[in-house]
Amino acid sequence: MKKFLIIIGIMLGLAVLGVGGYAFYLYDSAKDAVSEMHEKIETDKPKPVITGKEEDLKPISIMLLGVDEREGDSGRSDTIIIVAVDPKEDKMLMFSIPRDTRTEIVGKGMDDKINHAYAFGGTQMAMDTVENFLDTPIDYYVKVNMESFKDIVDAVGGVNVNNPRAFDYEGYSFPAGQQELEGKEALAYSRMRYEDPKGDLGRNDRQRQVINSIIDKGARVSSITKFDNILDILSDNVKTNMTFQEMKDIQKNYKGARRNQQSTEIKSSGKMINGTYYGIVDDSERNRIHDLLNEYLN
Image (cartoon, rainbow, N blue to C red):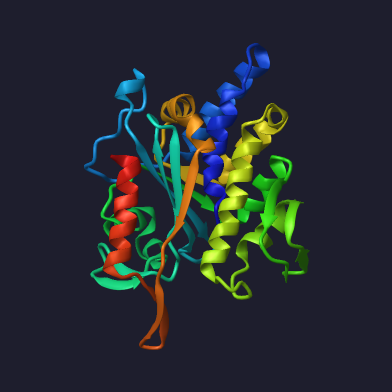
């Protein structure tokens, strides 16, 4: 799911830390937690400039990977979200790549569903495959175990969403309109797709709502008292190639972009191939997404 942007919520949360002993404790705890979360991937791409003078700052791209990992199973990515941030214009693009999207699995030598890349080769293969699909380099990734999602939502005090249509799922009822959800409710709200007329696209939209609410909650002073609890959850369930310093720099120089966010949907057509359903994204749609990304990443 999308608990990944939770990491960005952490960055934004750092912005509200005050001075004094408790602030130092939070800073020190965050540094320790991030060291546990840090995980490198192989890349020949230089890191973007994210600190220094405002005119020198470069746009950044982030892949948010929600994985479903169970004991004895290599797991697979349940959710893939791409975030592009332009610090000069303070704007952010966020969109989901549907999990059934058929594409080349880089390093496997075959076409398959894009979410299978993680099962075949972990984060490295998922990153390589997504970059190839988008024809765009990705600077950072944040991987979150889906099982932690409900704990993260509860740690920030719940999330606020605006449900476009009423539905029931996993024993919960979600009326249309604004509502506040606890962790288990938010997980169910984000998972439903078969009863949604928009299918995966509808689910992706609901997931982005939850992520944005987590970010907003994480950036508020009222969340500071829960910060150490959030860090415990994240250190056990999150991996990222961001260093602690990079998180601080992104928080400082890119946080304004969250208030100017655009989203889009990747359009595909369903097709059965050898008895398996795939989402087929044609070349014109891939070019549209690539060009849109370039508007944010220059």
